Image (cartoon, rainbow, N blue to C red; front, side, top):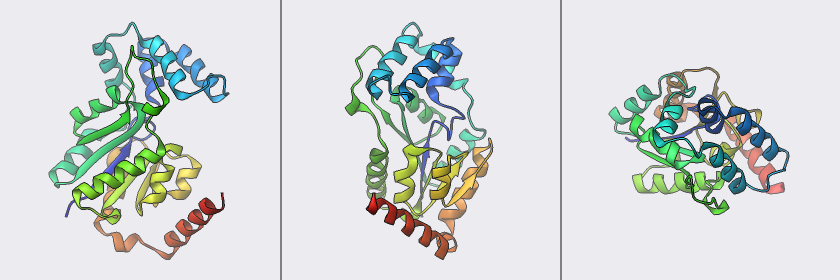
Length: 232
């Protein structure tokens, strides 16, 4: 029986954020960090405007330099092995990220079966309707499960931050990796560390023996979360 493993990238497979990691290796980290802080303060109007400014920092970098910066970033250990094991079992691994797809799709060369991300490109003005959102993650997961003939019980999500909240609420099984407090509350299990193989073992146990992990406590926690969603 097949399984679907859904991975976030920034903060999950990648130890930090792709913009910070790539900018550090291109020599423009301070400028990128300033833009990040300005966006957090509300001084940059929207995500598209923010990306336009980030891309201006990267405009002199060649595709080869971007690829090298991406590959040399601080990744979790064991990513290739995890993707390989999923493939050998006849299962599917996908990556969903709010980072640009021209970066994220490189993970397909590392063994991910498919990648979904923000569809922006350098040299082209960015639009907000190109951004991958938390809602899109749920929609994409639902479509993939339908295409593969899988139920939610045969799927596990791995993530760390607010962009994963809706997906974690939607699926019965999830693993929070070095996760923010809100994700820890939602996750079925959590992992803190630098080895994706260990987080994957946790996820494997969830989908390989699902009945064992559907507990009264997990049902109660998810019911409380749904109630909060209804009242907000």
